[in-house]
Image (cartoon, rainbow, N blue to C red):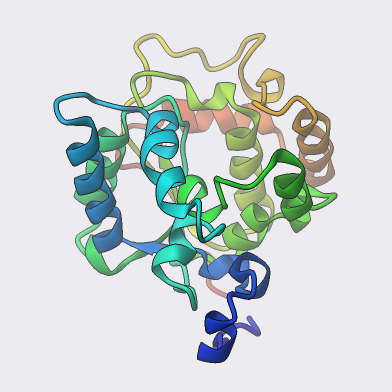
Length: 249
């Protein structure tokens, strides 16, 4: 893919050149072992509590990354790790359940490299800086680049929140079927009586950043795929399902 032999020089790292701009998005990954180490930090920080991803980002990831000004993935791996698995999920879920679901799904969990938005993207950046990072089109965003270059697309559902009430999750699902070659796998359970459609699901889903809605809807429209049908399929699928096997040229 042109980045197979990509390397960031030690000199560049020592100069603290912005690694987020230097390292290609498909290398903004954390290994399974590093994800488990993050879970250990979360348990230490929250003790007997069961935090969601929002709380983990605010209380663990941001303090760790604040001085460096980079993502958690690049804080751990300044030269990047080539991602094998793109993870799509909703931040309302239990962070620890999220990690356990992924760990239990992959026999090679520790050595896999995961692209996860809250570790891949710099969480301490200002909103305008993040908008610049995402770019003018979702098709050019780090999300889209990673989706196209990972060999597995993992849908991690949860019992707290229907992830397809979040438009970014809808867009990621559409993008992998439109442009990705990866295997599409489903784990985790949906909330009880989760809706497959409605005024807040699929193309009617929302974003934390309101300005993202139009950007994502335009991107989805370009694919000519039935987003709502894909969402319904992902919601109905039993845990452990494979919605598509990896396409090999």
